[in-house]
Amino acid sequence: MKPATSRRNFLKSAGTALSLASVTPHLLAADDKPASSARKRPNLKAIMWGTIGVKGSVMEKMKAVKAAGFDAVEMASHLDQAEVLKARDEAGLAIISVCGEKHWSKPLSHPDAAVREEGFAGLQQTLRDAKAYGATSILLVPGVVNKDVTFAECWQRSIEQIRRAIPLAKELGVIISIENVWNNFITTEDKAVKYLDEIDSPWVQWHFDTGNIIRYGDPIEWVKTLGKRITRVHIKEYSRDRAMKTGDVWAGFKSPLLEGANNWPGIMKALDEIGYTGPLITEQGGSLEDLSKALDRIIAA
Image (cartoon, rainbow, N blue to C red; front, side, top):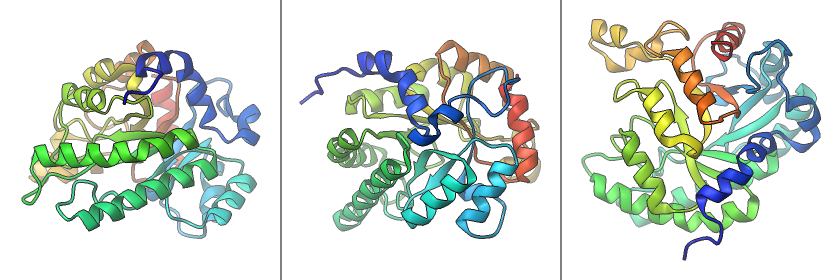
């Protein structure tokens, strides 16, 4: 059965509210504006938890992120909630998304139903973590195509499991955002739209990664095509030249921000045109200070 509220109407009425609601309620008054009033755009500066190049406790990492000039983090799931909440509050950061911990190891597309069930349980926990942290979106890798799983099987199995999670997502007020990754699955913007349309729920949208798509297409066209379906954006660089010179496609990700193939002024203009004011989340190696400064330049592009 289709939800009473269509995706289009849901996004039209709630898109801006969802962007702001991703900030924890007690921080909303302070963090619904960027740390620097001089910023050209209102997007919160965030960083993906798994790419924070600082050793230490959750508290130490949170404080280092804040000191570098970030507003928020995209948290990992399956951590100690009490520890995370204490560190979030003391550091004065918002948690604007939660990345699932099980979606690669226990993909929703796995041929073994028992493994798919483990992946589904991981998806549920990620949703619950997001609710606890005040985030309104989670990052989900929907499945993996490989020698054991065809494209059609990945499509069917992942949609089946995601649909099972929609009632919980709706209950918690947390959107499931599908990320474009190197999983041999969805590599064109048209297929991304078709995938979301088949699921047909306002509680399932897109987590767009700028770097991951360079190998397959144009980030600007993806932004224009997905439009209001984009709920979160990963800011990541990729260098075609580096990949070609080394003969290693993965080496392209070693390019620092602003030194790869992304047309940042064009990407930011496209995001402006679709009305995206949500967080910009770095998923990139490098010092926190350098990443923060590069993100400032991207926001001002």
